[in-house]
Image 1 (cartoon, rainbow, N blue to C red):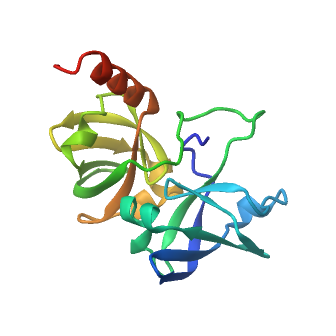
Image 2 (spheres, one colour):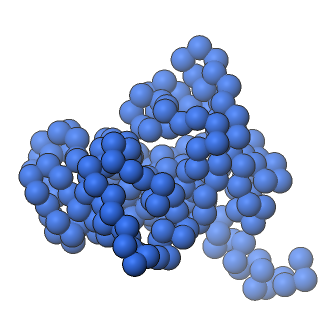
Length: 203
């Protein structure tokens, strides 16, 4: 499990795709290496997508993504030099800060507008209707692995307000209109929606 509190931004040093699979090599920021972190088999959220560490070469960690992951996320957009948000899985004795994030991306949204107000930025995203049905105003959502509060939601779009810290410490500060991002809706909302669909199929 993750919390959506990004630990740092990594730099993609290699993104190789072959036979519907991708191998990623990511340079990990020093702040995440200071405590000797990093071991084979560890789970790391990369732009909100949970992947497993399969190789470690000093400050560079390697990951693999299969066809299903590439089809449901933006990982296939990554190239050498891309900045990605990173978060290691929450330890059992860790402090819970954001919201419950599984690292299981529900779908992809597109940045439709960016409105800057001094140091703050309002950002709106377009996404499929079935995903907006799982989003509520003032609820939680993970955008590229960043835990955010929804400002407003409409049929096919939602908006968030990004504080200066988020803009500086995550790759959302570098997003432009037309960019694609990974979306994970609130797990609690998904369970409620699933229950209602099962118990009230006519609604």
